[in-house]
Length: 100
Image 1 (spheres, one colour):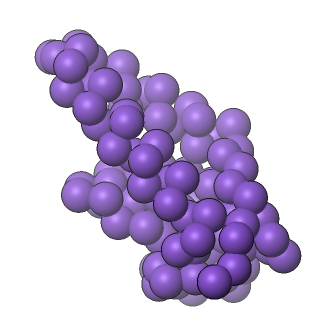
Image 2 (cartoon, rainbow, N blue to C red; image 1 turned 120 degrees about the vertical axis):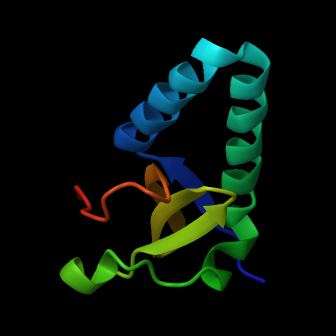
């Protein structure tokens, strides 16, 4: 099985922080649990990156953007060489337009 280095782009970090703060307004514990579950799933992409399907957003840009679904959230990423780059973290109800 291939091993990848996982990198998180600033836009994805901003997505994480924004949603963490939104959840934290109601419950800091829920925000922390959500954040840790997302980070745990992202860390597993080091071995499982190729198992996730191509994201619907990719039909517009053809960059092999994939998505990992975690509950109501999707981690959008792509693989280049031995690097998995996390581009965005989105709620499943969010617009499918991708700022790449």
